[in-house]
Image (cartoon, rainbow, N blue to C red):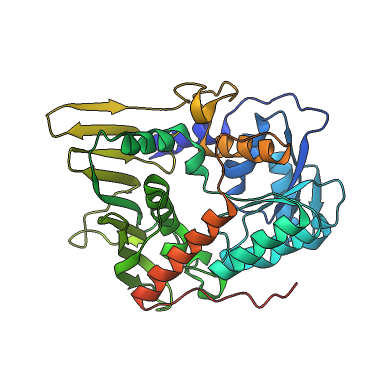
Length: 383
């Protein structure tokens, strides 16, 4: 286990330091979140157009410690103080789900661009309001589905759309964690903050199904939630989605898979399999492909192959004009490249559009409705 942790740390946190451009974007972080080093701080080190300039936390001691650990210049004792700083160009919002709506709106009001952790908000209506307000104010907001910016996800979509698998019949995607990874007191179990396995891990396979099919669910055929101690929160969810063209998609998410037969530990599952009438393709570890991944393609004529895509296969098509990527670039580094390009008026190789984010939350709410748990509570914040 120690060897695995060391490998992951090197992949996510050991990158070269770029010489910063004079007009580099200055980004502030709302909250000293544990995801911030992997999602922003480390990718920013190698990006010449980004400086992580500030962090704000309600616990100033924690913020000071976080800033010293990561070489961040400014520390604020409140989120609003950071938003009021005119030297900050953009905000990274990794706050608990239930706070996304309020603090993204406040950031937009302050004229800041926002890199917004998924899920965008607790409801589709909140998401719609966020992006409408961003458009009104002329600022960029990006929902951080980082895996979508990596070439491995685009390669699987290319295989699916090429016809090699024939007529697509089904998809099956998962993000499941064995018991013990997410602590019982984790905010992911907090209903009032938008907790739930579907909100946390389930957003990924739902998003990937929509990405690969370029379609929205027609209906939710079934959805079953395994309740957490707070029965309003799903520790795990399995759902089947009816997609256009008689395609079915099954998604599974779990924050604490119990051992098999009470003693056999369960393994992580972060894969997506697409089946057609001529073959099937699987992308193993689509969420963190920079650590390790593979795409297996098996066709009914008996042929099979395995691909690994750590950099774009070419600089044509959607990657036209793309700078040379490195094999060590993480999904988050690809995402940051797109975020900066968009703000600077350049065309990113890929973008999660506002309508995509709204439809994503509509799908999540439909699954929660079918499971009987209902949507996460809407924010009471009024701008």
